[in-house]
Length: 102
Image (tube, rainbow, N blue to C red; front, side, top):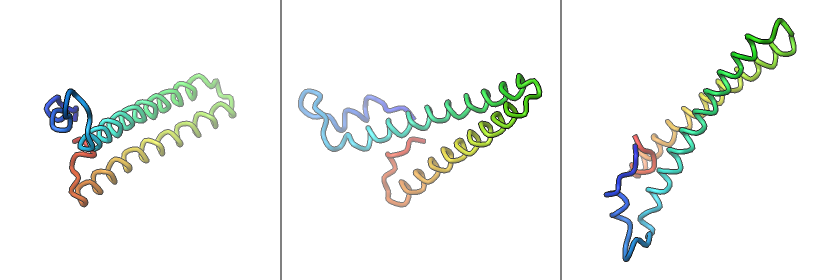
C-alpha cells in the first residue's frame, strides 16, 4: 500500500519537519520496500537456477548447483512470505495497523 501525501501531512509539523508520528510511516515504507526487493531477488534466483539447469549440458556439478540454488531460493521466498504474515499478525495483535501495508 503506497503512502499518500495525506498520511505524511499528519506527522509533519512546522515547515515539513518530521515528528515522532512519522516513525510508523517510515517503518511501513522500509518493510514494503524490503519485501518487494527480496521477492524480486528470490524470483530472479529461481529463474537463474532454471536457466543453469537447462544449460548444464548433463554436467552433474552444474545440475547439483542448480538444484541447491533452486532449493534455497524457494526456501528464501517462503521465509519472506511467512515473515510478512508474521508482521501482519503482530501488527493486528498490537493494534498497530500501520506497520505493514495491505
